[in-house]
Length: 320
Image 1 (cartoon, rainbow, N blue to C red):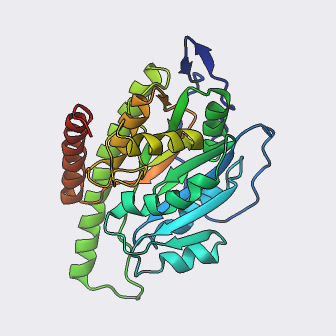
Image 2 (image 1 turned 90 degrees about the vertical axis):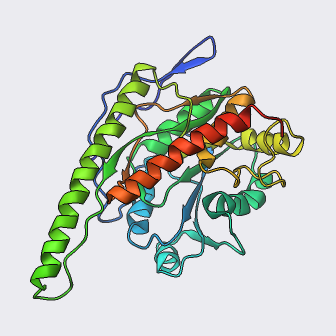
C-alpha cells in the first residue's frame, strides 16, 4: 500500500538534524502501472540525478523504474548502469525511456560501475545538484526523493541521506504450462515457503533497525547502498580527498567508491564523516528491497557485511 507522508521539516540544533516524528508504515507495494507523478510544490529543492547500478536485474528493474516515475518530486535524470548484463536488463530499461550506460571492462563490480559513470558526471554538476544511488532490486515510496532532497537542500552540513526499508519477497513462479510435474511442484512450494520465512526474519531485522534509527531522530553511522542521496559538491570534495590521501585512495583515480573493500557503502559513509559531514536516515524516507531467498544467500550476505565492517574500521585507522 502507499502512504502519504508529510514533507520533511527537520529542526537544526547545534548542527544536529532530527527528523519529523512520523509513524513507520507498511512496505510500499510494487507499482503495477505507470502514471504521471504529482508536481512538487518545493521548487527550491536541488536537481536529483539518479544512478541505478544493475547486474542481471531483468526481473525487478521495471518495478524499480516505475517507482521512480511515481515520485512526487521527479528526478532531473535517471541512468541505469548495466554492468555485464547478458539478460534483458538493458532492453527493459531503454524501453522505459531512461538513459542506459553499459560498463566497459569493469572488473570491480558495483563500485567500479558507479565510478565509471561518476567520473564523467560529477565534473558537470554544481551547488544545486544531488546524486541519488539506488539498488536495482529496490522500490521507493512515492515521497522518498522529495523528503531526502528537502533535508540536503536545507541543511548544508548533511553529506548524505539514506532510508529505512522493508523486505519484499523473491518467489518462484509456476511454470508457463498447464500441468506441472508433481516433483517440481513440491520443490517449488517448499522453496517458496522457505523464502517467505526468510523474508519474515529479514523484515523483522529491518524493522528493528528502523526503530533504532527513529529513536535517534534519524541519526546514523552508515547510509546503506540500498538507497542514498548525496550532495554533489560533497562527492567532488571526497574525490579530491582521495587523490591527496586525506582519505583511503580507493581506485587511485579519485573514484568515489573504493573497489578494494567488501562493503563499499560502509567505507563511503566513514569517508563522508571523516570530511566533517553528518548522515541522516529519516523515517519518512521509505523503500522496499528484495530479501535473500535462501539460507546460503542470507549467510553469505551477512558474513560479507560483518567482514566488511571490520575491514573498514581497520582501513580507516591506517594511513593511505
